[in-house]
Image (cartoon, rainbow, N blue to C red; front, top):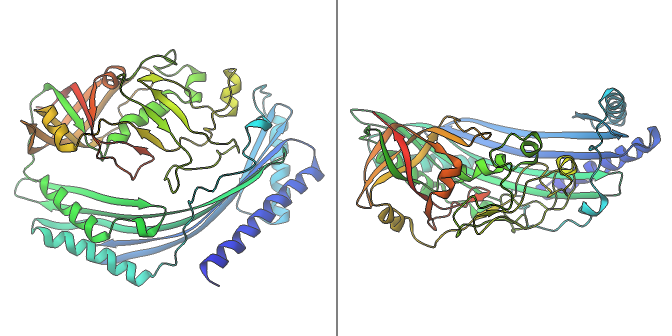
Length: 447
């Protein structure tokens, strides 16, 4: 059986499982119910030092059932898709709901919010993988890196992954929706050494279509060039200075916004942006648009984990915060409408000023270019920010030498407003698509 036929057979089985679950639920009790099945079929090929480490295959799936007994909720999951298994799940979910606290805000989404006609977002591009050819491809990529410079002495591991996912959602309000997706990725990490230090760096590529992956040899070359550039590393003194977050890590700088405006944190009043809706929190020129419907987008989905339709929206408009990120539960607690964010964000498009990375360096003149962050020192309640950093010192708009063992610190409210510019070197391998970011000044703690 070829791959396409195998997937169609699997999808039909899962659809029938969902329908059977709905019918069995009606036989047991007439509670509102929602059902979600996720099945992922894939493989990982791992190489280290041009030698095959392992090939892993996975075929993982789970059935999630949630029942609402008036305002009490019972949830259960299982990998047993048999009729008896589903009956047991329903019994357990119903029993849990009987002993759960009543919560007026729990329940299925409003019917008008449900996605009864999912859009085709071109997310599914299954390919038969020739394992031997792909192993040779990754080994060639590591060869490319080793041949670049004799100071590259080791590999920290390189891999290729291929995964196909089937998502099916249904509820007792009549919704039955599905979408399939594929995701392919290449990753290479190398180690270089000189007389003073040993450094590592990596490069990667992610795509919905395997043909859209960056060639492995190019990734090998990029990794080699990057890791060698980190040799000769120095320390710097404590200073206040402009910084640039490179496009490799710039998405992290906006990821804190996700937590700060999530419905859970708004309801708990545990965010420094609690009273900032419709207030300016970024420079006036900056916009963040969320678009769940980009064809082949890494963050594209027709509906969220509750079946609520996804929609294009402004997150930041002219520097002003325009929305919270809400699921059905916290939307009801706030007296608002779900924004379809049960399960996370979609594609975020960060505006830039259409200048090159090289021009961004010139605009900074002197300061720190940050290429890697360490630690988790961000407090969403206060906005306080402190993280370890590695990168390069820049003088007169030119990269001079690599830097390590520094800490950058500040507060996100100040940092977001101190964004001077964003370049057009957009990192397309993240659902937060952003170029490199120049900040006017931040505290850098060194020697």
